[in-house]
Length: 132
Image 1 (cartoon, rainbow, N blue to C red):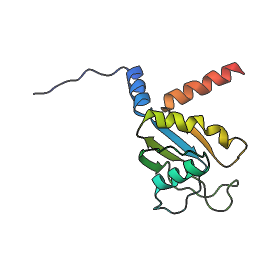
Image 2: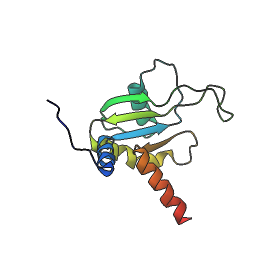
Image 3: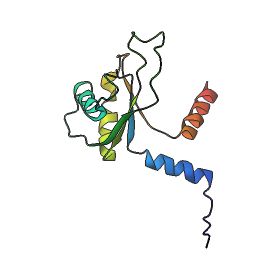
């Protein structure tokens, strides 16, 4: 017996992706210490030192994005930095982190962003172009 499932509407798929990445943040421009580094402890240390977060943040999962690439002209000889993506246990942890992002203002080294599906990123870029 073959069971057929109804096809999902593309907007439903984007909505599901948004919901699944709701608790994720991305830390950009963090130096990679070694291929086998512990991204969870590295991220917690970053949050405590750079953002001065004293609350207990629970990270379900943390890892680097993309593959290792050759150094670019902007790198200081240590290869390209790869962003760290964090899957936080609670949405409130994400709100706490995003509320402290202002402490990074003026630093060229780091920035933090939310994770969105590629369709949403592309849509937002097009909106920003239209405003200009």
